[in-house]
Amino acid sequence: VQLQASGGGLVQAGGSLILSCAASGRTFSNEGMGWFRQAPGKEREFVAAIRLSTYYSDSVKGRFTISRDNARNTVYLQMNSLEPEDTAVYYCATGHRGGSLRTGPSYTYWGQGTQVTVSS
Image 1 (cartoon, rainbow, N blue to C red):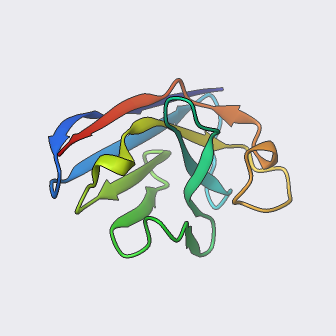
Image 2 (cartoon, rainbow, N blue to C red):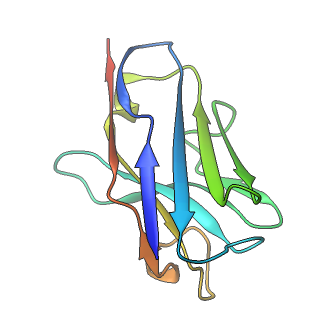
């Protein structure tokens, strides 16, 4: 099983990016899939997740949208109104094995991460 995250980059504050995470080696239809991020010197934190519903951290709610395309085995993260505080490496995760979708240990498979940098 491999997760390939892409779409990161450098953007000015107020801009938008779309992250993609393509899964291969297994079909994850309707399984929980999540996005997490880790900024330098900080712990990894939950960003968004999707299963039958969508879930967001308070810091991104209203600005980010998670979605999935089961036919492509891909999950997306549309990020709008980006802020410098959103700068981090973003990781996608799947293989939800129970527990909260908001916690990292609930997931089995992780992508390699994609860097998002928001300049002020």
